[in-house]
Length: 404
Image (cartoon, rainbow, N blue to C red; front, side, top):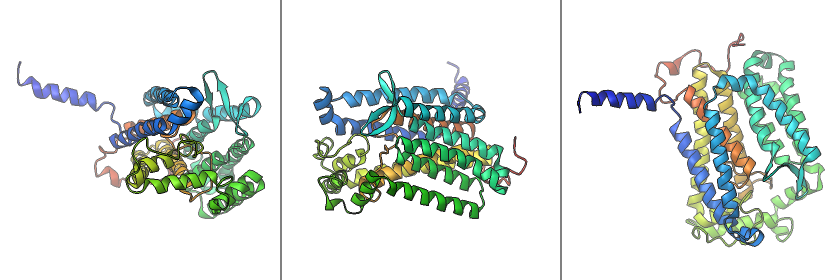
């Protein structure tokens, strides 16, 4: 073989590999979280699956199938340019509203809540989809109406009215946790979009007061709040979930009791493979395992903002707001779930993104990560020359006369 051709072949292979650059760190972190989630779903659900379904790995097989669906949809998302997501944002939001209304009319009730639409062999949870759709819509809105949002009350109130409608539909299910996540994510995106501080402060105060009023207006929410303050006052009723989670953390100590060795998952800790997966992980893998998971989610949030900054420096403000919004959403939901498991926040029915059992949750989380990877493909972080990092056009929001 002609040795002179070897460098050319290597160059050709390198160019082919770089045609579709992705953020390797984000991809690695998301992959580790999904893989670890599958392992922990298997460990946490083995007993309840054997008792209820007659198959110890029932929930593992279903979760693996949903992961494959999420990866398949995510691969499709990677092929779609961001400009199309920006154009379709309003339609996605409309679809989400239709699904939220449909679940109130045709939804399936589980544990007193109507949050799922029966779709044959699986159930669709519209509240998971609406989180992604709101981020996509608001990212486009902040580009189209950014100047209006920053300089007039009207432009500021329009998206908040939409969020208010979404929050109302979520509370009717009821899904207070999803309403909190959507509201907080939108507030964060509006702040990054350049809303005046006095407007943001007033809105934040109103939203906080509204959520507090809603929290104490329902008996079951009041019970959750009081049990969170002192779960040991009634450890066999209202404080049962939290006390069992805290026992799991205590048993885990530094390095855990070993994978599969959890006692709390054996019918003591309710929802062990969904909402309280992190407590089982802390029991089996100990403090070191829990800190590792926290570090992975911190890295995920960091990469989302790094990718958003890269898009911002390329003046793709939609990609920037989209990355910031997804990072805020996933980071906030992870923070709430971890806080609930550790007893520092009241109990909420929120899954741990990319890890907890749940078809809608894992599929939508994969879609969100795929969108982040798409932004990193169009605006690679590692390939930014130092000169571009100091571009004057890299401010957080577009000029008064934006792209549209």
